[in-house]
Length: 219
Image (cartoon, rainbow, N blue to C red; front, side, top):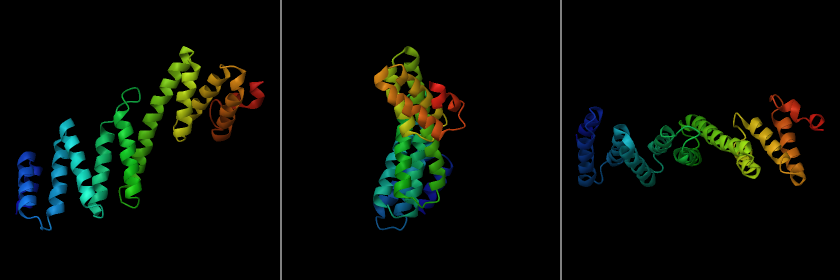
């Protein structure tokens, strides 16, 4: 009865009342078959309430649930929601990457801990989306340094893009500007410049830069 009452209150957005009821259930009936469901419902109530505080509380409660009930089917869903919490707060590539980085960590954790869950395909797609955002941010910073003439800083960023995010949609652009930046750093970096352009031709033969990156075009 307590559990049903709490769920009804959550559906009516009476989240605080629902949590009080669920906490009463947990404290009073510590051997109840509804104990795990009650803990998960508390997390869900915070998730549905939303806002920065609500989402932070939800994440903590979901992680607590996974810690106590790692083998329950609902644990995979709890981790998926932790991933969603960070994913939904992810900002554009030119903004603070904090939530994107945390979303990447949480989605990886979901795939490692629950590789066969029904949420795995959705989480894999989210991970690709996250990495696209992270790569785009690094690429833009690399181009910024390149255009300023700070080629060492540019190569540092662009190396990260092409090595950490090979599925990035602009990886060929990254390799092109990486090769160009190395090329402007003098003879000592000639081999690195050639390696970047060779990789561009090999891995992205349909790139708009592929023809120009050919060895015959570099002479």
